[in-house]
Image 1 (cartoon, rainbow over the protein chains, first blue to last red):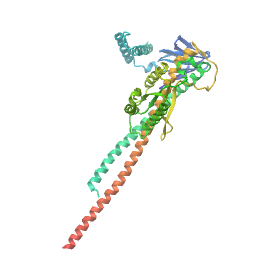
Image 2: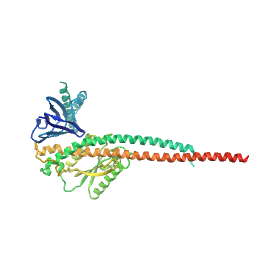
Image 3: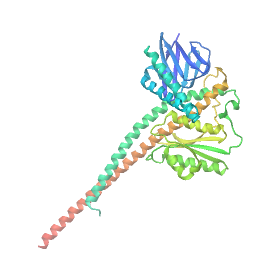
Image 4: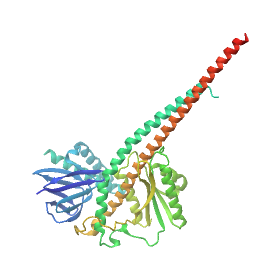
Length: 137
Length: 286
């Protein structure tokens, strides 16, 4: 039985539709949601969202946020969301390389704020790469 | 009486100015639509965020998150002033700056120490000249407001609030009332106050792992969203104000051209009449 999924970012709504199942990257681990799930709220980390509609899976890379679940609908509020076909794989690869390079060079002793920033950047870029790969398989 | 050549030159130069103001009006109009769309797009996120924060913060104590903390006496205050980067938009920036300067002066009279953060180059230039030692940070908009900018401002002011460097944070920006009116406004950003009224159903949510750690994620985001929303509104107002300013500038040049054309025709007619008189009186003298 399908339910309503909405993904909203500060830039606008990036996904809305009727879905059968959704798997979200919770801070405490991934979790799947089906219709009539208990109402709950959970923070999300950077990761991939798996949206399943009519047996087909669609992936999206999301950054930090939270999900609001009630029986008939799921609302996901995140800083950013890119659906698999919106991701430029070459650019995502380049972003991974750039962040990795910075981290290798800095190795923790530099400005900790910047270091954390690049760590986050690397994680987001890796998620984007992973999401764009799954599409090609 | 100015001669014909001078008048013609002036008409020419005013028409060129008119082309510029007309072009700027068109550009501002296009940007206004884009800015309005951006505000529109941010609304669902902002509304949802506010609703959720007030739902979750029901029934938790004030100590549930450090950004909620109300300080007994406010000794240090920070004012975030949003302006635009560019001028030529009428009184838009000077209104916001004056409003902020008044707020700062009032609080200083009460014995508060005030620090300033500017979002937008116009405000930055103003306060750099007058209160440079009070400037904490500057965040120019660089063409277009982004969520990342709001995040940076939010991180900076929240950090200073939590560390105790400031006890309160205010945000001054131009409220977009309509395309014709923008009014400067101040809102208290920190300590963060969730709406007391909960809209919609208040069915308790199962919160994972617990309300406190969820608030740790939510509240900083709500502050970011609050700033982002204000910056977007300010941006919309900027383009609306510029459009109105350029509209009236264009109208003024039209009036001027009309007046000068009249003057030009009069001067030309006067010259012809003079020449005729000269010829006639010359003929009579013979």
